[in-house]
Image (cartoon, rainbow, N blue to C red; front, side, top):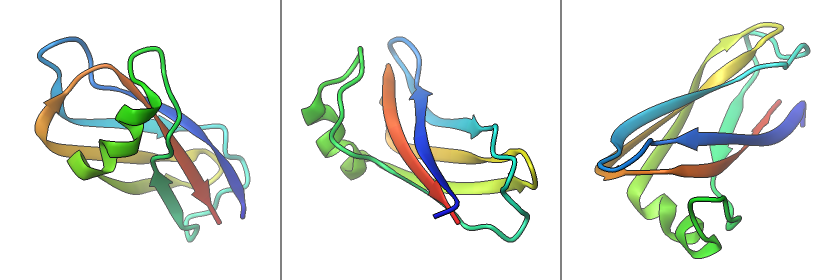
Length: 94
């Protein structure tokens, strides 16, 4: 694994948003050909319980892209439902 970490994605206050992205920076060793992945683990935030995180993947899709060599990448999220508050997203790249 090149690196791993946590990004916090914030869908805002009620009524929330259907789409949101978060930029992961500080990845000096990432190159244009690197592969990045984002996923959810059951870990609480100030806004959501461990249980909320357990079922979050039922409601959202996560995609990574926009890799910038020496800098980082973007995690994109989309849901058919409006979500609100913050969620932890785990990420890895290689």
